[in-house]
Image (tube, rainbow, N blue to C red; front, side, top):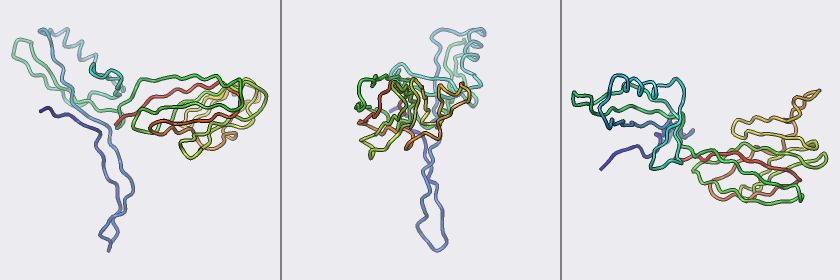
Amino acid sequence: MLEEPLMAESEIVETEIRGRDEPYLQEIKYKPLEFDVNFAFLDSWTEESLQKVKRWLRKPYYCKLRFSENPNRLYYGLFTGEPKINHNGINQGYFTWHFRCNSPYAYSPIYIDTYDFSASDINYFEFNNLGDIDCLPIVEITKVDALGNISIFNLSNGNKEFGFSELALNEIVEVDCLRRNIKSSLEASAPSIYRYDKLVGDYLNLLYGKNQLQVQGKCLLTIKYEFKFH
């Protein structure tokens, strides 16, 4: 039997009160995913090839790691700790290095979906979140008719609304729903125009599974996203 991590380690954060046997649950804290990776040399190594491998793997920033058996599952992290090399004395063998991710999750590649809703004021589309965690995408809205409102209702999440009021003709608004950043194509105009005060509802949150969405207002819509997996 082989042993490998199933998912990231979790920790219970709770508060104990004197005279109460049951502590109060505050939250579940998930730690970054960590695992060991083995690197085998198919041929005998040289000092030059060994140094090349060291330069390749030791980076001062988070890098992308994927495995051939599941190339659509991406890990972002750093090799850390002290790697140990096992060999037979004639430059043949393997070494093990510990990999620590930047989060508790693995990720899918980044996908971009585009929709043309310029022909009608009411439109519907479906988004299937294939990950395990809610998806907070980057949304780009282009207003294609006169001054007015654009709203997206998630019918699968209590009809929660995400949108903007009083967007200008041909204005482009880009929203990072995870980081809660809003950029308008009119920011470079004089005077500069920002749209935080025109946000209606909350940032778009796409639940696990199928999300039925309704778009009110004529626009071009682009959704940029990635899935997260335990």
